[in-house]
Length: 392
Ligand code: GAF
Image 1: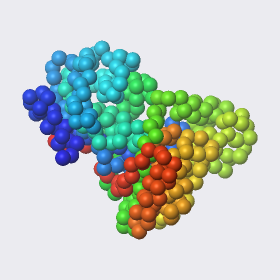
Image 2: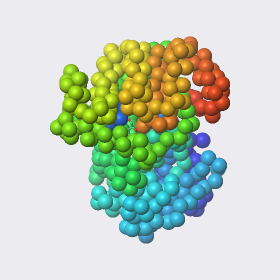
Image 3: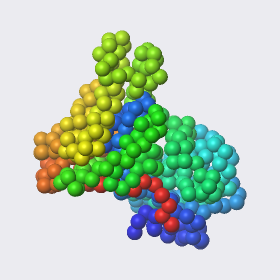
Image 4: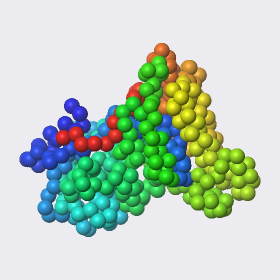
C-alpha cells in the first residue's frame, strides 16, 4: 500500500475518524549543483518515487498531535503541543521538523486551528535524499489545508513561498543552516524531469530527463553512513563561502564569474580558495549539464558528474571514503559518470550507467563494500517522479 493509504488507515485507527486529507511529498536526488544553493547559484534536482505522507484533520483547540509510523510498525506519538506556544528549542527529536513547520506558518500569519497529524515516510533517513524536507513539505501542505490555504485554494501561498517557510522551519527552529534546494525540489519537481532552479531569481525550468529512453539508468547508492546538517561541517562551509563573498565584495559567490576565478582566488586567504573554486566551477557544471540535457545528450553529462565529485572531494572536502568507493568502483565498472549527492559527509552517491551495465556496476559496488567489511549499501535505480501533492 502507498504511504498515503497507510497514513489514512493508521489515522483512522488512531483517531476513530477519517482524515480530512492526505498530502505527500517526495525525497530528491540532486543530479548536480551541490552547495550552490546558499551561494545564490544553480541546482538540478529530481524527485524520487519515495514519499512521506501526512494524514491530517483539523481540531478546534489550537493543539497539535503528531504521530509517526516507525519502520518497526509501531506508532510513535509525540506529546501534544500548543501551536501558539511553539518556539525554537521547545521540541526535540523527530517531531522538531513538523513542529517547526507549524511555528513557521504561524509566524507568517497562517491561522492554524490545531491539527492531528499521522505521518508515514518511506524516504530513507540520513541518506542524503532529503527525508527531512519531504516530511516538512508534506506537513506544510497538510497544515495549510487545515487553514483553508492549501495549493489550489484562492488564498494559497505559492510553492516558492511555501519553500521559504519550510526553510525558516529548518534554519530557525531545527537549527540546520540549509539552503532552498531540497524543499523546492520536493514541492516543484515533476515526473520525467529534472528541475533547473536558479536560486537567486527563483526561476525554475523543467528539463526532460528520461534516462531509460537513452538506454541509461541512474543508480542511487546509499552508503548508510549517516550524515546530519545540524553538525559543524555544513555550517563551516557555508560561513566560509559568506566570508569569501564579503572579502570579494560581492553579494554571493554566484557573482564571481568563471573567467574571473583566478583573479578572485588570488585575493583570498588560502583556506577559502578551494571553497570558492568549488562553488564557481559547480555553477558552470550545472549550466553545462542543462545545456547537454536540453540537447538530448544525456550520456554527455557523465564527465560533468564525475568532475563535480572530484571538486567536492578535493576542494569542498565533503566526501568520505565510502562515497569515494562507490564513485571509483562505479566508474571502473563502466559508469558514464558518478558523484556523491546531497550535503555530503555520508549519505548517497549516484552513478549514471548504461542499462546493460547496471547489474555489473551494482555487483562490483556490493563486492567492494563486502571486501572492506563495510555495511552493505542500499542500491536502487531512480526515475524522476512527481513533486508534492494531495493524495486523498
Ligand atoms: C543539503 C541542504 F539541505 C541543501 O540546502 C543543499 O545545500 C545541499 O545539502 C547541498 O547541495 O541537502
